[in-house]
Image 1 (tube, helix red, strand yellow):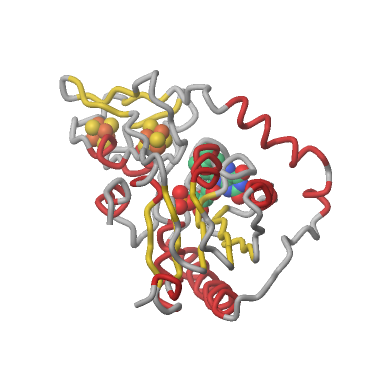
Image 2: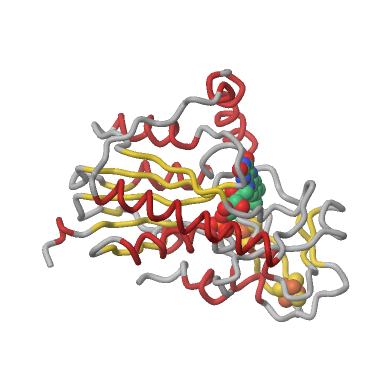
Length: 271
Ligand SMILES: Cc1cc2nc3c(=O)[nH]c(=O)nc-3n(C[C@H](O)[C@H](O)[C@H](O)COP(=O)(O)O)c2cc1C
Ligand code: SF4
Ligand code: SF4
C-alpha cells in the first residue's frame, strides 16, 4: 500500500475514551494506522507519511493538553493534505481546535475539520458520579452515531470550519484559558496513595509520562517529571487508593469499559 493512501491517526488517551474513539474510526475508515502519541514523545523527529492525518485526544481544562500541543508542533506534516482533530470531552466549550489551527498555520497548513465527541468524565475531583450501566449504554449509542458522522466526513474529506456557534467560545475568557493553563502546567497535582494501596504497580504501569516509580512497594510521584494530567493512575488503581488531596476519597472512578490498564499502558510502546 502506498503511504499516501494511509490515514494516520495520532491518539492519546488516559482512560480509554479517546482510544475508543480512534478504534471506532479505524473500524469505519480504510487503511487507518493508529499511532500512540505517548510512544513518540521522546523522539526528536516525527514525520507523518500519509495525505490524511488526524489527532484524537481528551480536552483538559478547556483546552488541548499542553504536551500534545508541543507534540503537534514537532510533527512534520509536509505530506498532509487533509488534517482533522477529534476532541473527546465531558461537554464544555474549549479552545483546543483554535490552538491546533494556530500551530498548523505556522506550518503552512490548516485544520480541515474538527469534531467533538462527548463521553463520560474521568475527572473525579468535582461533582463526579461515574456513568452507570444504563447511562453508558445510552451514551455509547450516541458515540457510535457520532463516529459514523465523523468517519463519513473524513472519508469525503469535508472542509468544515471550526464550530464557533456557542457564545462561550467568543468571550475572551475561554481563549485566554489556554495561555493560563500553559502557565499553570508545571503545578503539581498532589497525588498520593492511601492505606488501601497493595503495591501492585498498576498506577506505574499506566502512567504515560513516566512520573510514577515504585519504591518499597509504594508508588512515588516524582516531582521532577511532568504529569500529563491524564488521570490514568487515579482511575485504574484497583483499590481506589490513588487520591488528589482530599478531593477524591469519597468519589468513584471511571475508565472506558473496553479499555484495560494493559491497553492504556501499551500506548508507551512503538507499534
Ligand atoms: C484534568 C482533567 C481536566 C478535564 N477538563 C475537561 C474540560 O475542561 N472539559 C470537558 O468537557 N472535559 C474535561 N475533562 C474530561 C475529559 O476530557 C474526558 O473525560 C475525556 O473523554 C477523557 O478522555 P481519555 O479517556 O481518552 O483520556 C477533563 C479531564 C481531566 C482528567
Ligand atoms: S495501583 Fe493502587 S494499589 Fe496498585 S500500587 Fe498503585 S496505588 Fe497501590
Ligand atoms: S501521574 Fe497519573 S495523571 Fe500524571 S501522567 Fe502519570 S498516570 Fe497520568
